[in-house]
Image 1: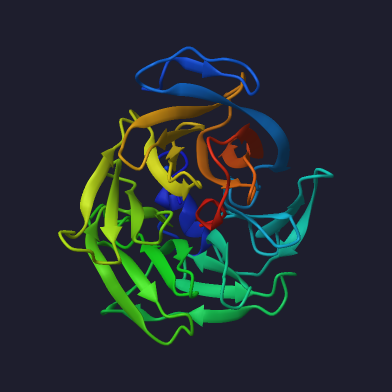
Image 2 (image 1 turned 90 degrees about the vertical axis):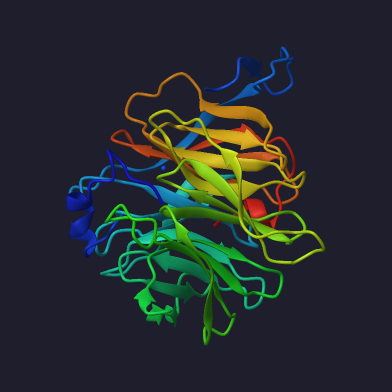
Length: 339
């Protein structure tokens, strides 16, 4: 999750003391041709639909965590929605309609993911340090995990599930103080046990498994870097290392998605765009919104249609909260669906 307008902590405190993310010269048009460039091509994202306006009560709207359900509909969270307002929205991308799926009086939800174990929708509440789950229809809210992990309450931002349904959480601990106290926390699928896998991170934000579930890609918002954390140890494999340094200028690294070819889609806070890298750190493309950018400040995340290449990017700013669509470089898988 990212800071709109320099992540004003004063504004976001109204949500319950919430401590709250050089492109290439090649131009790409689906079905067309593109000129080669060493720094990658530009993929154009076009406005698909507007989902929200700025909320009077919070002065913001911030869309996050797009994830497709088994019914083919897209679920999106609005981090700054006020009490009673739509905090999880469901979008029928075929009919271009949207309706409220879930709301409550307290949560500030920054991500959404369906569990492969129980099929429920899991949300991170960064303001209360909780992970909650819902039935797919938005009912039956349950507190899945709360409390301290190694003596500190989490500020959970994004989630990645392994194939067995265990959760891997980016913990943005320390962000409000500007201290590198961020962590990666593994929570067993029954919510009974949590383990810190990595610490000392700078505002941990995006998290996604690679294609083979051997390791995690992790973005650190205030360092503009992507780290790789092996979770399956292999001969000669060391621990966490810096994988990509993102030249974002005024923009910062937000959520991460991974497609079927292993490419990383790095969302950017402070710019309505995404940077796309290969698993080896090569800059392949930059996803840019078409034409108008006034009032659009951040692209926070993306969901690529499972088994297809149609991608839906969440974009927000003073102009409102939008979905923009583009053609991804490869097909969508679980790692490119929510987080």
